[in-house]
Image (tube, rainbow, N blue to C red; front, side):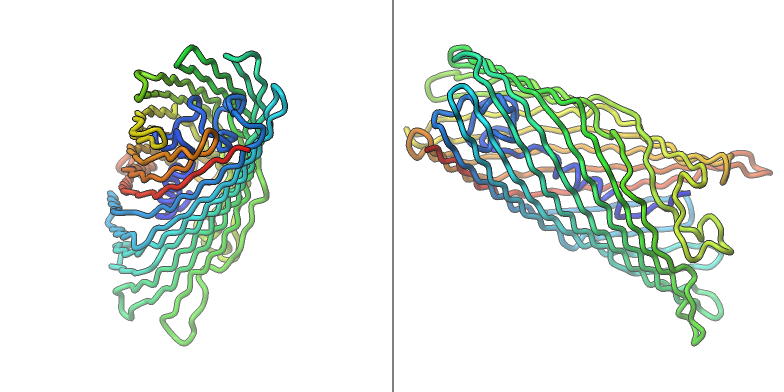
Length: 450
């Protein structure tokens, strides 16, 4: 079966955090997407918002620095083993630039987005597979995301607008793990274990949006049919016995999984409302739902885990073994909102918060390799965030935003596999990993109309 690794739960959380919508300015009112125009960065929000721009041209920028204030990982296993990871470093930076051109009732906008995140985790292991084995090592992850978005908006009248959008995204994650271990046997056995995984993800998602203005209020809706994804995976592994002069590799191989297609994100609906409660106070609320889907995922397996005698020098694609990995996502739910207060004619104070929740289940089974054994994975992700900051209104069509955001994120992943034991019936093995982080973002954004 597929080997459980520390880096995958961590990677899953980082990607889910990156996918969260910290846009502008509405950035600081909970990261609104569907309502409350900001300026050029509206290209990546509800495309219908582009029709609300006052000037014929607008350019926008955004910068976001992210780090962590606290992070903990706890791993428990039912087998005689212990995994103790400790996050030593996590940093990330984001930049985007947007441009909008308005010609009569039509507005066309483009946005380029780039982010980089990296982390380093110290790993300690203890197991008892016949002999007590201890190990120390390091797991590091670097993630790069580049995205391009094009949006088109048409103003139906002075109150109603519609828009269409296309978002294309490229993700590359580079994961490395090195562990040196010693087995307390006679004589002792020293093992060097190195694993590297590069995952490339190319995806595209279209969308359509609508905005209606009623006096001092707005109602906005955005719908996407889901995300089409092509993923490529490259694995490299080295497991070396360095106990003696006749040191030899127990496993040494490289494997590559070509780009494979998956419809792995379901349709989504975003609906929001904004209203001026008084001359100097505004409020907004927004709900996002992504509907569940089921898909099958491909991956690579180390050959020595399947064929110990001859599999030391290659990786095996799961489909070659009839190994089926069925993933079922649960609804993604996000609720966010905020308040704005005009403290002067040129200064607006913003306060926002929100929460995200999602989960998935996966079942891995092979009637060829082991028909009596099935692995299950259940992953639950939750985050709560708050943000605050100030908008500086520099004339009629220019705005500068400075603020900060704090998010509390949790990820719980439970892995269970059951197999038949001839004398005892079913035997269950369980592993539970819980990751908690507190992230801090420092955000600066601006939009200039001309």
